[in-house]
Image (cartoon, rainbow, N blue to C red; front, side):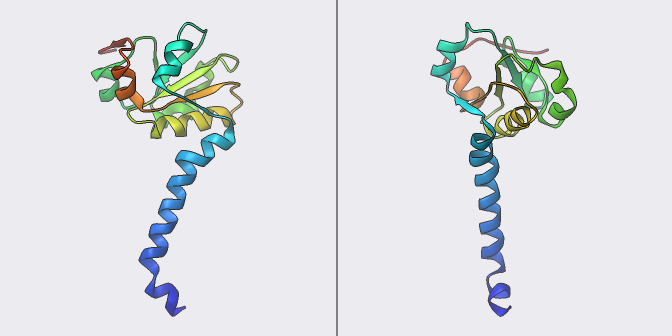
Length: 135
């Protein structure tokens, strides 16, 4: 018991790191979510698919993929019926963390093919992919 008390901070840090590793790296892979880089998307963009941007409203308005549908992360569970389960879904956010969580939710809900866009909007814009501002 004394060891636990002396190492409580280290235990909490280890638990936090384990949770972050699980939620961002392992859970998406185990759920069937695939990663998609900007260069992968350049080859994939002409395929039939949907892009879902899970960022906040202010982030969305500052610039988003031209063909994206805006469904903030907190609304994915309530609004996933707006998406076609048989159509590939590419999920994007600012960095890839929130999109990973949303992609995992979609995959667990039975969506056939779900991609997490790695690198987020920074990678999207660096690749010169089309963006639009506002609604």
